[in-house]
Length: 168
Image 1: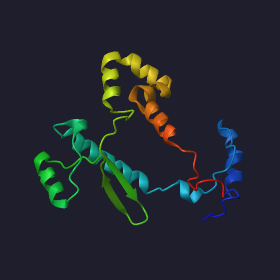
Image 2: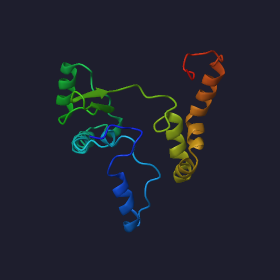
Image 3: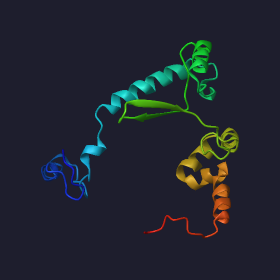
Image 4: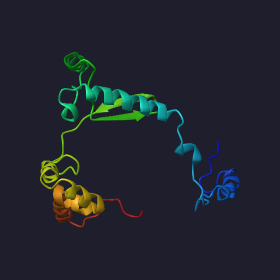
């Protein structure tokens, strides 16, 4: 296994030489740590979780607005019995080091660029024009959601003090 981050992997020179033959330009720099970039077993795990989440979501009476599952095992079992296919967690966080998966949930943010009331109402009012504007200029979406104002408020609170994150 290649572990030297400052030197390219041994096969990089060979790979860079074959890229132009296939019409692909060689990379501008080699991948620093090839062993950490690819997890071949992760793709099937992620795909399986995605399929199960989609099935559960499709069987939810509230669809994408389904509430987060209860955090206790007894509450989760009761919620699964109500729906039939199981809970729809807001987020899954997997840890390959110990092969665990956490089901996470959080309250919706009032300035979420995806689901805040301001964004949803603008989308309903303006339709495709709003979508196009948001895709062409992400700042327009931040402005519509209120995220720009929240950032400005946070910047105003910054007292310029040293938080200990400088170049030390």
